[in-house]
Amino acid sequence: MPEKKTVNRARKDKREGKAPSTQAGEFVHEEIEHVREGKHGARSTKQAIAIGLSKARRAGVKLPPPKKGQASARTRRSARRAYAAGRRGARRPSARRSRAVSNALRRESRRSASRTALSRQASRASRRRSAASRSRAAKKAARTRKRNRS
Image 1: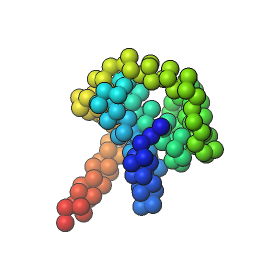
Image 2: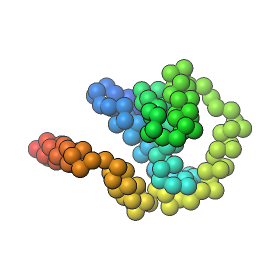
Image 3: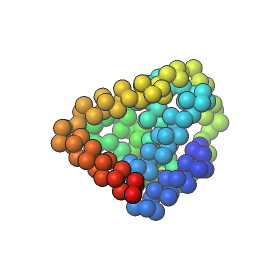
Image 4: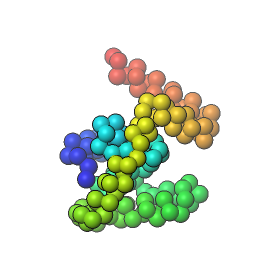
């Protein structure tokens, strides 16, 4: 279950008209914090991000599952299930499944949420994007920084 403050931050983002991926970012952030605090681990940074996105979908963020070719069939199926669960409204997960997931995650490493691991993941993700797309994002970030400073 996501923390109340995370859900509230995501709702605030929605009210401000921000994109679903931005709203989902709050849940990813929470997940990274959990790994850092030592609540549980993750096999990789990608897994920590995936858990956060799944939590967001289950919490009702309108983040559609990835298209064919963007992710494996298994990932798409899991995302579709989480998205449907979010549309239905929250139901308590079974205690047995919840405990099994928690125990499995506790055995994983905490290294996946380190600064280096996150940086490595970000550069790998950006490598898949075109130079134009990266440039646009950098210019937008510069504009945002300029606007927030004044």
